[in-house]
Amino acid sequence: MAFQEPIEKMSGRIREITVGGGDGALVIGGENVLPFYAWEGDMPNKPVVAMEVYDTTPEGWPQPLVDALGEVFHDPAMWARACVEQHGADMICVQLASTDPNAADTSPEDAAGTVKAVAAAVDVPIIVYGSGSTDKDAEVLKAVAEAMVDRPIAMGPTTEDNFKPITAAALAYGHIVVAETPIDVNMAKQLNILISQLGLPPERILLDPSTGAVGYGIEYSFTVSERLRLAALGQNDDMTQMPMICNLGKEAWRSKEAKTPVDEEPTWGDAHNRGVLWEATTAITMAASGANVLVMRHPESVALIHKAIDGLMES
Image (cartoon, rainbow, N blue to C red):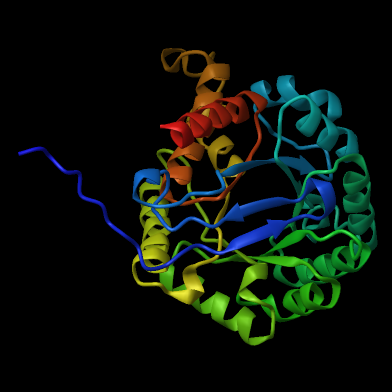
């Protein structure tokens, strides 16, 4: 008797969301199977990579990152253009780190100007992350949303503490919100419910469940992301069916294994390869958990992930 491979049919589907506008827009999501299980259903859109661009020169980055990107640190627009034209980024994720009240405390108006300059330099979709300061992010993202009224963006982190003003700005100016929660299935679902109750359609919400890096809680991150996908697909849970974004670059490169120079730990091997592989391994793990957008840093890590995703989509 011939073996017949069992096929599991899911009752739910991840929403398709269009990020960006015009010729550069990208569609993400749309799958009705677990990641890369194409033999069981449809996965019409592959995961994409957004490369980070900071609004200030990063401090304390490992030398492999400085060597790969340092020439453009002084100009976010130039940095974004290099990410797209030289390194193959599908999207750009502008990190407004300088707006942190404990850092340069850049004004919302200046932050909006930075985002507009990046948008003028590239045609790909743009994601904007604030500094993580709850109150300041609400002010900054409102200014960015107004400045970008002619070009839809995704913006966050939108949290339980500031979702009302950020969602209101997204509603007013036609943008997507990135709903961020601290690695918890129920909290992720609840925040999506709260945002939806304010009138923002679920098709304009991206889910950021937060993540760790390889060796730093990625098992827990994977489990939570997978449970969100199982709820969305297997239980047809409407409030978990948003595409997922993982802001993983900063997590991978803050780990000691990725950033420690070889002269401090000679037995760990070449620092350049170690850091690149640490980020790439973190990224492919999160793609396998269900991430539709991977936010990354190093060009070589990005190239590895593009190759891995293409291979998995073809298999």
